[in-house]
Image (cartoon, rainbow, N blue to C red; front, top):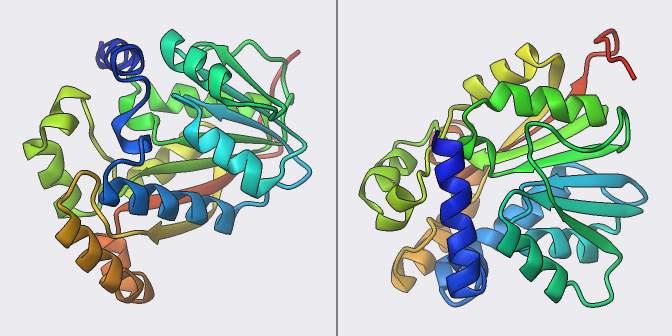
Length: 245
């Protein structure tokens, strides 16, 4: 299964490279892209005072940034990659974040344990995305999905030619597909935004160029739908969806 392969690959990265390439901060394009991701998440969903579960938190980079900038009441990050979770725990310093190893398909928490579940760039590694969304709705009335923008032909091209993307089984889905999965899982989409234009792992000169024209891309409805780097979707659980204790 592709999902299992991805876990093993990312766990190897955490063990060998002491973190993930896109969160290391070494490359300009990664710094710019990850910052735009953080800003977009905080733009569409309030974290302050809420209990949040970050599913597939990886090495904890984004989780810790969201703790520092979003000020949730409580924050738990889970991931199937044991070495990544160990890194996150080692680096969280005095932050009151809990990091744990867990399977996103069967999360070890009771119904309605959280106010919000974050599914950040993890559905494209899952073999059963709808089941993960359904499991997230079991735990919280609200979810936030962040994914590469599968409407963008450039994203599809990068997936084909980039050695990193190929070795890590990277893929993307359209906003329509993501919305359909939410509905199948018993939810309703409440907002969709398209953000960013800087591709991961691109040369510095192109990263600077892409960042300069990023506001133009994001300001034009058609351009942002088909040229933006990521899609951020928020959704609510349909009230009549049944869950048993």
